[in-house]
Length: 119
Image (cartoon, rainbow, N blue to C red):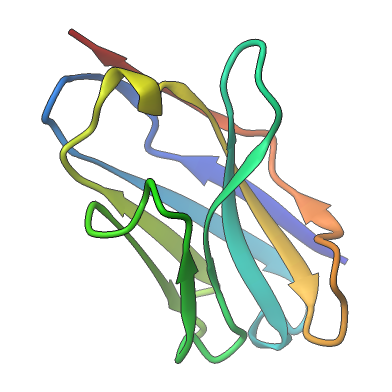
């Protein structure tokens, strides 16, 4: 079992930055792939970025490339999402998620943190 708690959301102006954090408790954090998802009102949840258990490999959705950076610290059981050049369309609830290294689906989810970008 992995418990995930996000923090760092808030209100930011267009072009601003936010850094989201996800703290994980439980066993074997370093054996889990980690990801950030988001869900905007009226839209389906979509993946933002992901990192392998070691953190050596990462994945970004097209809208996140060049603006967002995912990083993890296995010694501190944390994963972060640095978001720069934020736009109104980035407004959403952002979720941290974890999956065991041999799984396809993400089994563990945080409660989400709201990010609002105002123009």
